[in-house]
Length: 83
Image (cartoon, rainbow, N blue to C red; front, side, top):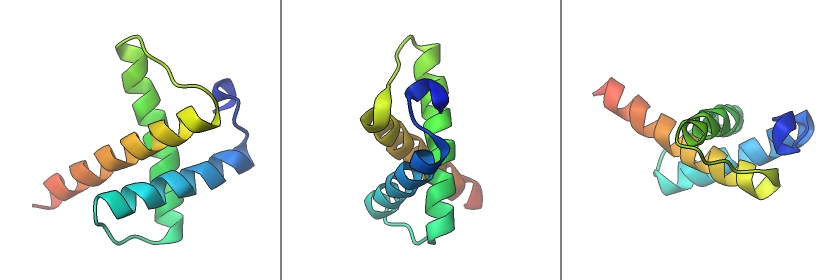
């Protein structure tokens, strides 16, 4: 997160926003804490995937986009595992 120029407090806020956006997009029902976790973990996963293919997202907007994409991936994986 520090390499993206985002501190811990900002990561929690942006992660919560990214998780909430993913929750709305994927029509899921989760709480605030789960949204924050999904956004932060999703950003880490999305940045790792982007790093494997040679891409990167930086700054607050990049972290938000990566968190949204990663959170959507996590929600989709959780739904696939439940079924």
